[in-house]
Structure formats: C-alpha cells, structure tokens
Image (cartoon, rainbow, N blue to C red; front, side):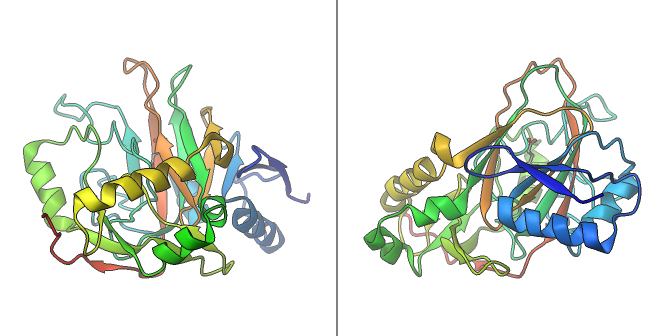
Length: 288
Ligand code: SIN
C-alpha cells in the first residue's frame, strides 16, 4: 500500500497514512517517508504500539543514533539511545529529572557539537488532556524576515546553553550537566544539508550572540523567537498513546507546553538522530 500524507497545519506537519511499523518498512515506503520528512518537517504516525526495539530499528533508517552522552541522567540505563521524557518517579522515590524536558523553545541537542538531525518521540502514556507540544517552521521564520535583517544575521552565532527551564535537577546533576555541556556557539542561520534551504536556528537556550553582551543580544533574541513562533508558523500536537512523532531539528523548533495535571502520567521515549557536526565551544561570554 502506498504511503500517503495528510497535512496537519498550514505551516508544517503531516500525518502519515498507510504505514505500520510493526512490520519491516520496505525501501519504497522508506523513500516516501523520507521525502515527507523533508517536505513537512514533522510527521505523525498514529497507532504504533511498537516495542522499543522496533522504535530504535525504524529510527536507524534516518541515520546514526545519539547515545545521549551529554544527557546521561535522562537516558535508559540499558538502551542509551532511548531518552526518557517522563514524570515517573525515580526508583528512590525522587521526582524525575526529565519531567520538564523541552519546556523552552529549542532544537534538540543544539548545545552540542553534533546537533540533532531528527528526533522520534514515542508516546507510551499521556494525560487525558494537555501535555501538548508546539512545533514551529524555521524555514518560514527565516524566509519572512526583511532583507536587511537577513544580512544582519549572516555570520552571527548564538551561544546555546544546556540548562533547562524548571530543570528540577539536583544540584549535583546540574553541576555535572554544566561540566559535560559547556556553551556552544551555533550559526543563527543554518543551511539545511539536504534541502539547501536556509532556516533560522534560534531558541530559548540561546543566551547571547558570540562577541556581544547578554544585554545587547536579548532584544534581538526575543524578537527572533517571537517572530518564529507566531501562531501561523506553528503546529500544536495533542498526543495520543502510541503516537510516533518525528521531526526535523534542522528546520523546526519545538516547545513542550507542560499544560497538564502533574498527577497524570506522561511517559514518552525518544531516539535522537545525529546531525552533521556544527558549531564550536563558545568564546568567553562578554558580560559588560
Ligand atoms: C522534547 O523536547 O524532546 C520533548 C517534547 C515533549 O515532551 O513534548
């Protein structure tokens, strides 16, 4: 059966119709999925009560997987390519490290030297209402800037930090996180290696532009995020259990809203596909 796509919003995203990951994906199906991935930026496959092994095997079709060395506190102990996004308590009864994961506009692993190509997030259990995720089309964000603004952004690097909003990490983990992940400078405009299109690469993990103070940088960072995430550039995903959501981190940005009752379980598992090397450890930040 041919794979089909049903657009999910004006800006980005499509539901994949006619694909079942319980059985191996043929080469023809894979080519269609890959084409859809490049075209729509976000793909949704519903009804995938697949095993972890099936999730991982399908993810490998996109490329090599990140072993999440930079996020050891969130990865599964036996399958490090699986990152837990969960509010399940830790075995010692403490709150989960990852209960606030993604609650800032970001592109996955932007704070590393191998920012993610794509991510595949599998919903195991989700709250009856809320816990939604927003996605923004960063090609549209770039394309709709004025010519002078585009010129100004050329050659500018954003300094990405690994810290999380409401991190909830213990002080020890927070320190370890900072040790493992020094701030990394990434171009504010990146060329997508497969489509050749330019996309804005900015989010709330960017604290300043390289060579500029935070005070100088903040107004422009705030404008760019506000511009990129305006409602008509965004798709809002309402999760169902067994959804597999796949996104291209090179041309989209996302935000977990956290709009749900924390008493309800929200457990998702993510694989992260390694992207091409990008960026460098940031120069000392200018503070005055
Ligand atoms: C993520 O940023 O990978 C998690 C998104 C979510 O929990 O909705």
